[in-house]
Length: 138
Image (cartoon, rainbow, N blue to C red):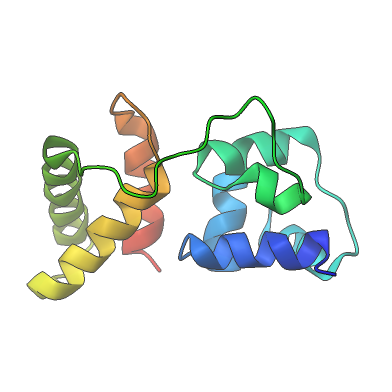
């Protein structure tokens, strides 16, 4: 049987984030994240809400299907305007940090950010900027 801490680690990995970046999204330290994934501490509701807002599947993490949560389709069309905006912001953030990525790497990173945002209908620019800052500096 897979434990809570193993599912938490698996979900973080699925989102393509290391412990430091995942912890920052959730508002905790890397040490706290390590303790959660080791099963030595249990996260609170604020942590769970933050990682869910960042795209984590809470039902999977807690080992249950959440009845009121509609299941996402296996495939959904890409919102090209949203992806273009992420790419523009990513290029600007990388340039500001003195980094330049080949097109393939830029596409991979933009896709990671797009997926981390999940199915949000709007474009929460401050949230995207926080994620981009973490990605550019990793």
